[in-house]
Length: 492
Image 1 (tube, rainbow, N blue to C red):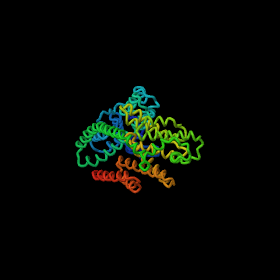
Image 2 (cartoon, helix red, strand yellow; image 1 turned 120 degrees about the horizontal axis):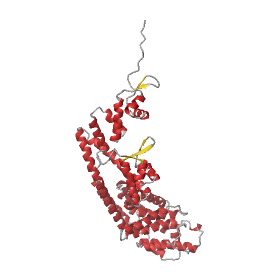
Image 3 (spheres, rainbow, N blue to C red; image 1 turned 45 degrees about the vertical axis):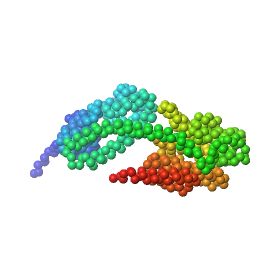
Image 4 (cartoon, rainbow, N blue to C red; image 1 turned 135 degrees about the vertical axis):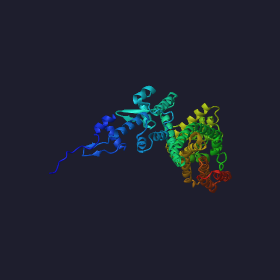
């Protein structure tokens, strides 16, 4: 007769027992199980599982590392599963995370504490969080911030107290964050390739800690150095701005064009050659004008007189003339672009930094407001030309290399489509306008170290040049580029 043995449960703990003995919640155990931090339980049925009693020690260790060392779960998982000495693994993990710095992992803050202690508004903290500058963790129903989050919010608050707008801080800090993220990734890649190979734990730890210390000291020093260089370049750009604007408006194929036109107040005479040239350049379709001829003639005279003033580097006189042009009329976008150019001239002649900043601010506002669609294509063409001249000669002030290239290509393309005009004087004007745009395009590309693209623009200048000045400049610049490319080391 067969003996029926009593079925005994396997050795192990039910999830409720494990939670009680390890002093954690059942959802926490399930989360750790999902993240691979605990071994899978032994299942005896669809709803019956038993956990190894060793899980108690592992859960307590995870809890301790989170509470005392503030280590993220992926790092904890690697430490636990390494099989090596726990202290060595902890030291390496903390070194990689930079825990040895001034970061205090044991200090955390609830959202209410952040709001109260730093005196920020909930919507402000939400914006900072939305820009991923702080990364709180959710514990239960509350967000918890670490020590670094606290300091970041404090820095944003300090900037606000200095009257720096929050949206500007978010944009700037996000730029820094993105570049620092790239640095961190490259640092890790280079470290793994160059340092870790054939080194002992103690040597790796020393390399991480000492290397991190020196690089942390290096970053603000290098930032100051680069800021100094950037300001120096910007001031050099400003000092040359008036001269470059004069060059942009000097048409060698039509000597003293603006002086000749501005000297005639007969722009209302439909038989005037000056009127034909100006109307074509500024409206292209003079017959479609609906305003009175007298009003049109006065507006055109003021615009041309303003251009003449700009060629003589007289920003004040240019603004006086532009103020007579209706900013909301068909010539508004051109008038604003010209006014921005006038403020740049005034800024370049400023005697103090406050004066320079004020005039640069006016220029920026005017250039932005000039980006409107006028009723006549050539008004837009000339507005873009004025704007792009400024953007291309002071790229370090506005960081406008890319924007300048785009607008210059637009001028080159549009002027290229119109060079078949029957009027010889107008066709020469358009041809030189395109040539000047190539001239400034090459300048921008050289400033951005895009030497091959600049060489292509210079070759095109030599093929289409109608004046010896541009030929000589292209030859000299190509020699300069050759010297720069020869002195640039090849990437390894």
